Length: 389
Image (cartoon, rainbow, N blue to C red; front, side):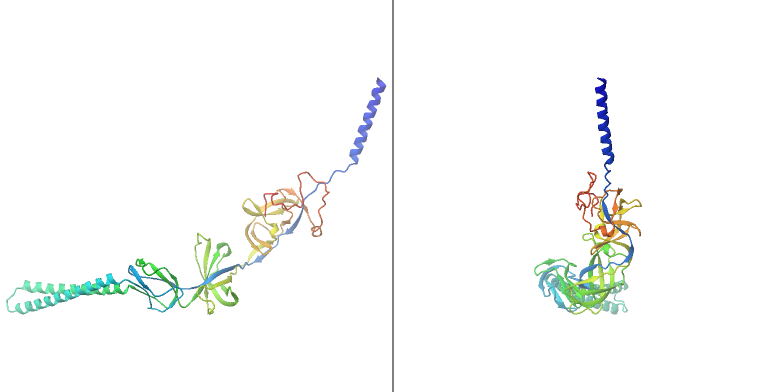
């Protein structure tokens, strides 16, 4: 029994030593790190030149409206018509106002007769008073009646003049030379006083009007030179200057209205012509990076940066604007910081990475490399991380 036991122990010891030597001979697999391409941040002064589209408008537009209410019986102008100052654009039914004129005229005739009677009575009292045939009080009463008749006549004449003016208001006349750009009244329509019937674009100075997003129009822009071109024929150009910028943002479109005053407008740039322009912006320091560098953190833009230990950290950035194949970042990055511009799709914060050399960028991925079960490299799946471009 003792010899058998020693034999089994020797065999077990031999097997253990053999397995131990075999384990020592196996190499420990090297840690596989995701390879990324890095670019150092270099700031440069960048001036954006956003292109905008607008139209040609008259600098002064006047709403043409009746000064009295009534029913339209005639309309002699339409949209696009060129009109002269004083030209009749539309007429109202004048019957009611003509009746008022006749009543006012009759009142004037009555007051004139009353005045003549008062004058005769006052003259009679003036002849009788020196002879003692009338009293002083009768004379004063006749004088008061004369003055009252004179005042009543003046009031009646004023009423007649007002009635005539009201009658003249049944004709809507152009306030200046220009072009009709809008119309909102038709024959047979009953309109109220001051309701706009036409919009008249006055002849003279012209503006190019653009609706510009506030983010594209920052800084002082007043009196800045702008080249405006006809959208259908870019060769037709005219120089202008920013004349006016609305101080408030339109709540529906989120834009500012920018008016560019034009000099010597070409004939091809008539009212309503569609034009384009580039609004120059003041140069500001920006970090220029490829689009692939931009990710997001929640709802905010961010980029992956590397610390001194080659660990990736997601850093929020601001004042982001876009151009062809690149993105301009104004806040959040400092010159010299290392930003991941390729290979950041599957990274997570504080993850150690391998920085690729330029000659390694085009190397094929070794599919036989042994890596950790949960580690993936060189994947472009957009669902792999919350930090998405």
